[in-house]
Length: 262
Image (cartoon, rainbow, N blue to C red):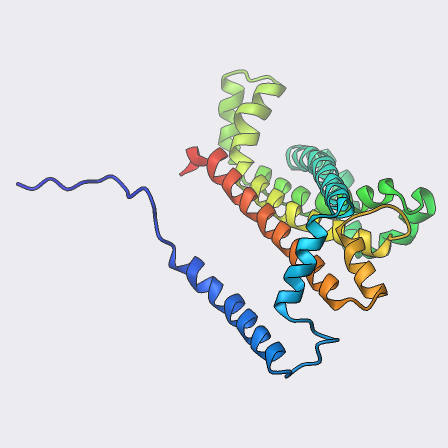
């Protein structure tokens, strides 16, 4: 009689991750070959090695790290504020019939307005400083997180509320032991989207409100002003890698926190 091991291997080799590297590597190889054989104008499209040199130079500059810190500060501040407001709003609207009737119609109208359409109004009152950028990020986070929170709360079966009444849960117990755990999956989905939107809005705000402050977006703007394509490419690569890192951290946090649902 043989005994089969039911333990899972510690490391799982994900072939999809390997396949996902094929296209970027092929692009870099083609880019390098094209630069070497002068298929493209080197003044317009620098060689990969030149971008690496620019990256090394930028990493040695205090200005780069100051800009990175400023962008991350705006991103995290806007994300946290927007998420807190959105989750609170979503729970209230999802639980209260009167709040649903009172606030949801206006919310549905406002979320149809493009985020960038708010910029003239924001800058009228807050100028071009950090407050304007952070408010823009808060708005970008608020809508997806609020929508998914509302959906998550509305999906809670009515009989679970009845059980909470039987056990005489107060408002805090109902929130912490019923609503938040039951709606957690939808809330985390909204937070993941909010984290992505926050980073996009951070860079967008730095592009469009570039009259004040520093940030990663300013690197790309400096490259454009100096016609330095290598600096532009470097800035875009850094922005892209940070976006991927945020998404990976959000997925990891979801797996860790919601492990009890699996």
